[in-house]
Amino acid sequence: MQIFTWPADLAPSNVTFYLQHHTGGAESPFNLRRKTYVLGPSRWVARFDFVGGIQGEGLYGKGAAIDAFLAQVGGGANRVLVHDFRRPTRGGPATGAGTNSPAAAGASQMTWIGLQPNALAFRRGDYVGGDGRPHIVTADAFTNGSGVVVVSFVPPLKSAVAAGAGMYTEVTAKFEIRDDDAGENGAAVGEVERISVSMVEDL
Image (cartoon, rainbow, N blue to C red; front, side, top):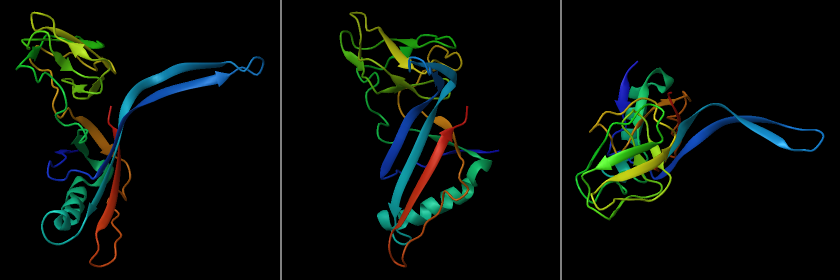
């Protein structure tokens, strides 16, 4: 199995990127109350939609480039490192070249140091990482007077993140393309292709 990185020049025209929870439940026949419980870990789900032609540059060469990349990946035989193209560099410690303190596996918070004091460092919806998958920030996080901030996120860290190994820009996860027909590209001759690629995180 090979791991490919989704090419930066093949940005999709539409993106779906969300955390899919794995829950179950049962409803009481007596009082109709529902009991919900967690069955397993959450995973990221992504769908990329593309519009592109088969000839020329820019939009009119994009279709062929997508075809070639998907052919190389080979469906579910390999994996692809993917980030949320809608927010590749949004937020993060833009207030200074900070770094993270160590964070343990299972943690839902990470401390960042060396940032501009008393500033908004992370916003709700930003991503942090360092354990090989994205974690979405759940609340705005402001640095204190010493340039330190504690960021809260979900899901919890899969593995420990060493000091300085934290990420906040283009945080990727390893995805599997489960549909062997993901590269389906029907189009009239001379017209643009419309391709949708659905993926799930490989936990």
